[in-house]
Picture (cartoon, rainbow, N blue to C red):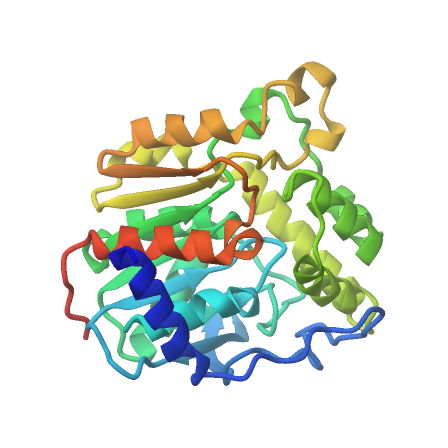
Length: 344
């Protein structure tokens, strides 16, 4: 057995005692606008703060390892995900000795969905830095998936002295869709689109875009998690925040600043990913040239000074869900290549 396989096995065994996985959501489950009724795999805490004249709270899980290795990993979720969808990764990392903080950004999951908020990656990064400071976390390793990858890049650019390692898991924003010719949609247009969200629509999109046509039962939990909020009494505020977030994603590219990243960066890229937000409204010639992750991963690695690229030939947008064992072997190997770090 290789050292990494041994480490993954040991981490999995150690993590087994950390939490009892919540029951998967049932079809047609109804959740509140802050995912009331949906269970997270670890105890949820709330960080309360003022931002833009409004009292807000961010939900997070802070999981301590039984045998600490002195490092803290902070997990940033994607647009169609939450802190809860990192459940297996939290278990593996905590089992391997990492303190793990997984949080829901404002507008997502169990965090506040304000009626009025000027979303920016800079604002979300500052919110996150304030949360981490409140629980005594100093230096971190950031792991960002999908939209969380864009946020992780922005956080690393804003607070470079606190980030020892950056891990980007199929991040979006490796290309500038607007510059490539994807038409701009207003917030009101996004809102009307989001009001039509259903489990069937989410599932069809994720099967085609995330999983290369595959579908397995474990892919259903994130679908029902999201759809449950749109079936609930807060669907309008959920849709409104989603629209604001799409506007942020589409108008605030980070790829032009990749060259300014100073920390070691690990790119974990599923090659079957075809994510490109807005491609359904783009002309055919634009659709043909966007969302090609085999090219985008290599291009990003060439622009980031200290990048290491790991490609998953058979996986798509969410390798941590599609092939947890393979993904976590690569993640632990990449983290182990970093220098030992003492966190405050």
